[in-house]
Structure formats: C-alpha cells, structure tokens
Length: 309
View 1: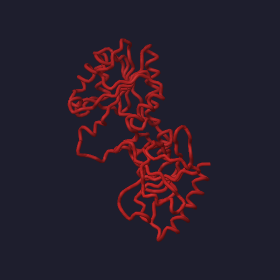
View 2: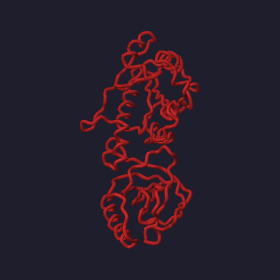
View 3: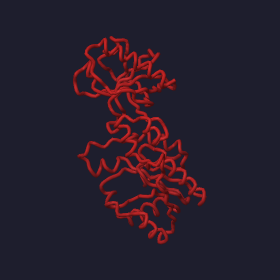
View 4: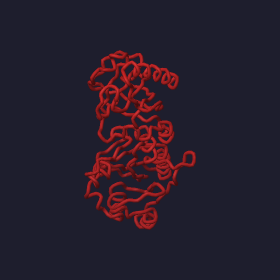
C-alpha cells in the first residue's frame, strides 16, 4: 500500500475505484466496504483508493468541542488499512476551506480530475460536500456526466444491529468490551508510553505500569478493572488493568491507566506498550484500607487468569 499526505501528492494514470470516509476504528463494517472496493478495482482493472481525512472534520468545524474521542490514532488507522491490502491510502488534511467545496466541485475537481475515479464505492447513507449536501442520489446524477459508476453498499448487520463507530464508542464508554470487540472484529487496544507513577502498587505486591495514551483524542474505556493482554517488544503478557482515580490510594480526581503485568519484571519506563482489552470484571471501588484492596486484587487476578487462559 502506498500512502499520501494529501490529494495533491496522488498522481497515477490508472483508473481507480475510490471510497471515502474517516474509517475510525476500521471495524467490520469498514472491512466490508474495503472488500467491495477491491472487487470494484478488479472489475475495471484499476487500483483501489481510500480517501480519508485528518484532522477529523469535527475537530476543524467545531474547534471548541473537546469531547470528540476516536477509536484509532491516525498511525493506527494507517497500520490497519495497510493490513487490508488496498493499493493507495490518501490522508488529506481536512480544513475549513476544503469543507466549503460544493458536492459538484468535490466530484469534478477531486474525484474525477485528481483521483481519476472510474467507480465510486459508498455506504448506504453517505453524504459529502458543503453542509453535507451531496447524497447517493446526487452521485447517480453526476456519474454519467463525468463518466464514472457508483456502487452502493447497504448497512452491514451483526445480530440485527447496524455496525457503526458510534455503537463501538457507546459500548466502550459503558465498559461493554465484549460487545465492542464483536462490532470491531478485533480486540480494542490502546498504545502508550510507560510513565512514572507513585509506586504505591509495589507496597501491596501489585506493581503497575502507568500508561500515557499516545494521543489526547484516543477513546479510553469506562472506569473499572479489566482483563487485558500486554504487548511489548514482540512478546505478549497477561495483565490486570485499572482505569480510574484510585480512590483507595490517591483520593483525587485525576484519572490514570495502570496495568499490573503478570510474571514480568523488566524496566519499561519511557517504553511504548500496547494494551488489548478482553473483559471488564468490575467497577472501580474504594476500600477501607490497603489490606482490603490487596485481597480484592488477588481475587481479581485469579478471575483474569481464568478469563485469559
């Protein structure tokens, strides 16, 4: 896969099959679109192209809204789309100027003139252009004028539920990891650097690595205790992770991500690790003393070992 940092960098003579979207999460619904895209490229003996955007349009159009959280960082999205084996990935910088393109200008100046589109593959409810004025029906009107075809993909369903990034986010924010992983088609994960904490976990026999997520906009699941797997330098370890304010230990409102990695003694400060979420086993809770916390952590660990094994 070749990747490009803007539409202007893309310049090939081949006919293309193109799809457009933020592809946040690269979940099962996205993968269905990618497969359709690759099939469309084969039919025209052309090349497959995904056009995506960063920053996320909401970050640009609503700069004062700091509530947006994404399932993937841009580097994760690139990595996951590369695994999908498409030919070209264009990550175009979204801007206010770009957002003001009319739907006709977008089709004529971007899809046709820049991307050489022969087949456009879009989701069932795709909208595009200024104020989202463009629709599937509009594309059908423009296609014969600019000599390309439009293929529509219907909503994909898992157990009668439409898959969407919104539903994945909802599941994660409610600690429903199993549901989120089903929607995604893989285990939700976060990457981050190990930073120094107060080392209180060591005093009760459960040393933890404090994780600082790669990007501020990466979605962190609900507070609680989780069964996780930790990837570090090519090896995978079982672990117990807590997201929350550590009410028994700290008594403040600062949220932390801490993981106790089983059978692990390496110094990993300032190193990057990846956490894969398997199951949320309980809420975060406050204990009367450290002895009660330690006993609960022993119970949690045994439950997590059973889950992960």
